[in-house]
Image 1 (cartoon, rainbow, N blue to C red):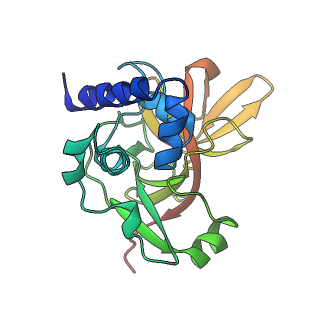
Image 2 (cartoon, rainbow, N blue to C red):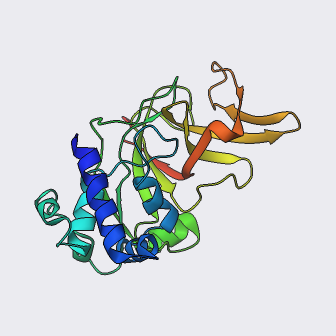
Length: 223
C-alpha cells in the first residue's frame, strides 16, 4: 500500500467512525466542500479522485490528531498561524499542464503556501473566500501563453467543480490535469488554449472532471 492509499484508508476509517454525515463533518472541520472530501475517498483510478497530499494531510492531522497523528510532523505551517488580516492559500497537489497535459503526481512546485492581505484578495476576487476554498497550483507548458506562462502560480477556486459558463478551469481529462478554457458550443464542449499554436478539441463531458475555476495568475518575470 503506497502512502496515498494509506492516507485514504485513514480518512475512510475516520468517516466510518463518525457515521452518517461523517463526510460533511470532516469537510466542515477542514474548511472544504463535502464533494472535495468525497473525492479523496475515491478508489485509485476513479475519475475525479483527489489524492491526500502533504498539506492536506497536515490539515487533517491538526483537525483529527487521533486518526492522523503521524501527519502532524509533515508540515510546520498550520492554518491557525496565519497572521491577522491575511488569507493563506495552500498548495493543490500536482502540477497543471498547459501543453499536452501533466499526469497529476509529485512535481517540484514553485510555491507551497501563499499569504495574501485580505484587502488585496477582495480587490482581486471581489469577495473573501472561506478557508481552504482557494488553492494554488503551478502551471506547466506553453499552450496558455501569453495569458499564463510556464511556472506561473494560479489561484484555483475549488468550490467551482462544475461547468459555470465559458471560462478558465483546472480540469482532469483522460488521466491528465490541465489549465484550459472550456467553451460550450452547439455541437459540444470544447477545450481551448490561449496559444493559437495549440488546436482546440471537443471533449466528452462524462469523461471530464472539473477541479476548480482558474481565477488569478502570478509569475516571476525578468525585466
